[in-house]
Structure formats: structure tokens, C-alpha cells
Length: 226
Ligand SMILES: Cc1cc2nc3c(=O)[nH]c(=O)nc-3n(C[C@H](O)[C@H](O)[C@H](O)COP(=O)(O)O)c2cc1C
Image (cartoon, rainbow, N blue to C red):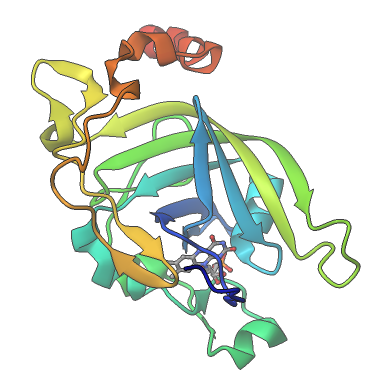
């Protein structure tokens, strides 16, 4: 039996991403988000426009998408209810947000220089993606009360860095999902994944190279020129 239900939030379980960007004073910003999904080498991020990160992405046009593993949950959570905006917006203040000028220190995470973008990577995150902003789409533009509050930022991944421990034996271009333990946010709570698949996947039978897109091929020549 299903019951009619009206949950206040509908976040049914997505990986947490720590977005690093550069603030106007060139300091590094770090913000956890869970509204993130990938299509090929594009990642679309759902962001509130009152945050510094959305402004940094629109202005700077680049970022690093750092994916924490589930054991980093306490450090990610240390960033909850923080913002790099000195003037904490009223709606955030009511929810207990505070200004934090050094989120790397607050989270106990280490900045690591990136190769293509100004914002630093997060050393402790097993997957780091340097990315360019390609488009910013308005969300809920049809609703006068919500218009302008959130955006979907379309980014193009330019380079991926993966920790050796999560790579498949003998194949640096394949992340072994048995070794990668993403941090999942489900209805505002942190979860990890079980360390084994719950079913044998039909899609996993398709050769991985058939999933490659022009974006990942375009990223290659830069790599070769290094
Ligand atoms: C686990 C977690 C997930 C979050 N997911 C999102 C999200 O998907 N989109 C968003 O705009 N904010 C999200 N937030 C809140 C932002 O981190 C928050 O707005 C923060 O103030 C942004 O920092 P900034 O103003 O320095 O950019 C999330 C926070 C946490 C702790």
C-alpha cells in the first residue's frame, strides 16, 4: 500500500560533492552539495544563489568537484551551516548559518594545487575533477516566489584525479566500484554504500570505452601536451 505523502524534502540519496572555488579576494572556498549528477563528462550542480559558491562559479567559470568517501562524513559535516559570505543572508541566519573565512581549516582538509584551475583540490578526497562552467540555467523560473533562488550549473570536467587505492588493478582509467565508497546524503542524513553490488548490472556488461564522449576525448590533448 502507498500513502499520499508530502515530504518537505525529496533528496532520495545522491553523492556529496565538495566544490572548491576561488573567492573575490583569491582565498579558496569549499562548499558541500548533494544536488549533483553526471552525464558523460558533464556534471550539473543544483545551487542556491545566496551562497558564495554560485557567485564564484558564475564569475570565475571554474571549480574542482571533490568527491569525499564515506569515512570523511565528520569533516564534511563540520562545513554544514557555514558560508564564505561575510553578510550571512537572513534566510540562512535563521537556520543557524555562520560566516567562515577558512573552510579548509574548519573541516581539517588539505588544499592541494590543481593543474588547470585556480581553485585547490581537496587532498583527502579520492576523486577530484577539475571543471569549467559551460552554462548556468535558472531553476523554478515559472514560480514567482522561487524565481532567481536556485540555479543548475552545467560544468564540463577537464581533468580527473583518482587515488590509486580506488583504481582497478592494471587499469588507471577505471575506478573500481568495490573500492570506492562514496558519501551519500539521503533525506539530509549521511550514508555509505554497502561494499558489494546488490545485483549484477546489465549496463556494466557494455564495454566502458563505449561510454566515452567528445568531452573526455577533448580533455586528452592537454594531458598529452603536459
Ligand atoms: C551535505 C550537504 C549537502 C548540501 N547540498 C547542497 C546543495 O545541493 N545545494 C546547495 O545550494 N547547498 C547545499 N548545501 C548547503 C551549502 O553547503 C550551503 O549553502 C553553504 O552555505 C554554501 O557555502 P558558500 O556560501 O560559502 O558557497 C549542502 C550542505 C551540506 C552539509
